[in-house]
Length: 139
Image 1 (cartoon, rainbow, N blue to C red):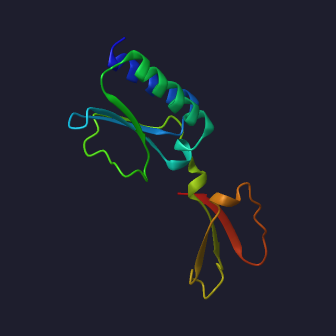
Image 2: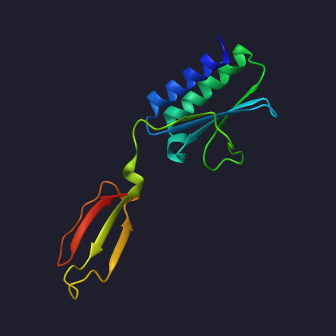
Image 3: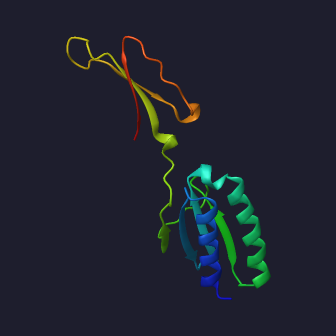
């Protein structure tokens, strides 16, 4: 098996198991290391990805590619400066970008105050309606 075929297997497996993940790849000759960056951090921490990490790390050394393999995420100490591969997520996780917008539409005929409340950690959520108008939106 070639290193490229092996990497393709990793990329495909990550996309299948964690479709919200962005995958970037770069080989750094100075350290002789294949770096695979998986973002966002929520995708990197998913059990499905952790299983892939263990599975392919073990296989990598069994195939003896004479180099190293390293999985990264957005808060890793090493960063990719020039990824040769950048695979967009199959599914975009908008739950991190859902906000409750509260405003009084009758205040002097203008929108004088708008309050944003991040709801990402409160999903699912219910919006209670009173004298003000409420709108949930994803950005």
